[in-house]
Amino acid sequence: MKTIPLTVLAHEGPGSRAYLVMMGEAGFRPSSIIVMIASHGEIGGNGKRVGRFLPNAIRTRYTNMAQEVRRMYWPRRIQKEHPALYEAIVNGLSSLIKEPRQRLDAITGKFNWNHYSDSVNRITVKDYKDEGVLQALQQSTVNNVLFTGGGIIPKSLIESANRFIHIHPGKLPHVRGADGILWSTLVRGRPGATCFYMSDGIDTGNIIETHDLPATTFQISEDDRPNDQTLYRAIFSFYDPLLRAKVFSDILTKHHGYLPDSGWPQSNTEGTTYHFMHPAIRKKALSRIFVTTQPG
Image (cartoon, rainbow, N blue to C red; front, side):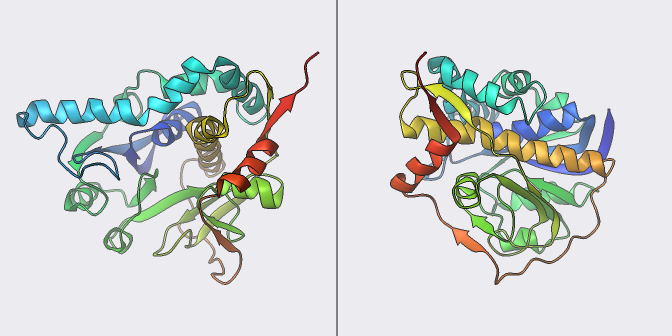
């Protein structure tokens, strides 16, 4: 296993876990992991500190456990309550990822962050704007930071000494914004992904690599097909995280664990910035990914 000069800024959930699992399978360990524990719960919550009546030491453990339960809720529920859907996703991913069942089971199961790096720093912060995030990054001697999602990186971090790396599930500059994997499938006929150094804008910054990926479908019978909301959650519980992580681990392998020092600038006037899909449009995109099989 090769330790590479990279800090993973981890946001508990399938995204961060997928990156670490796939890096590990490729033979890489980041030099450090910073695990962010949300002191005030999720966006849209009541805004109060989690476990605010508990002693500090107990509160930290409680907040960590509560966060893990919340953010892994849908992947585990879908895996348990919709086994045919889970099986369809495993089968569909087999052409893209080696042993997808093992990868997904590692993501949804009991997770030990220390298994993936020799340096794991857990910080309790409100969000990315919290000074504790920058302070934790400043303690590292590595400037390359993998952003794993869970919010918007503020300008103060973008302009710090760190370089934030992001994998966007769309080919930039053509597909920017939200629901990238769905918009890519709908408007370009296939998913795409881009690894880039982040700048102060929506999916802008110098590009390290772009990838067009083969169209991936999941075959499922009409009787086993759940509602669109469950399918949408399944996309972002399993398909999207593994696709991003696969692309990133492949790039690391290509460059022997060392990312290029610079990328090439993308045109900010090209492409389209998409927003979260309207349910009617989402239905069409989902029908191209989850293909209903006929009985017999």
